[in-house]
Length: 213
Image (spheres, rainbow, N blue to C red):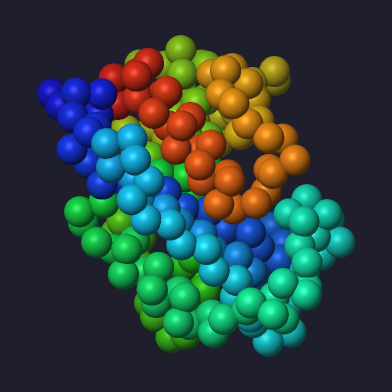
């Protein structure tokens, strides 16, 4: 059986994050979509894009939590289809393993909904290459043995997302503290910074668990 800890240096890792107008899985659109490519512990490319949708409606709660600034969208906003298409070129490329915080429980839905707005059919074929740091952190804290089969491990990640247990926290701040990472709390919810920390959290999880590849 092959585990990530044994050959992670050989892998291209796509780590991504969305900031959205709300928490509705079926309607919310991303106003920021950022991603980075890592290999052998080095960030080899970095992308940050602001999406200028028609009638973007960021809720007050989402604006506060994500530090949404409409002036940034007005000045730097790009055609959403152009950015969604660009990101999809990376997402569906089988050379990459895909990493993110709650990407299975949230971001994957946001991306799919965004693609459908431009006439694309739902396509979750990339999920078999996904490693969700929220789910895997919970697997670790629940002391579950990771499934050795890759498809079974994907199902286990979804089970972990749905598992509710008081006292278990797996957000980025909590995991960064537990793994003793250096971080600036004021930068949380800046997508590019969340990606930087999520990658480090992922690498710590890879060291601690037998995660299949």
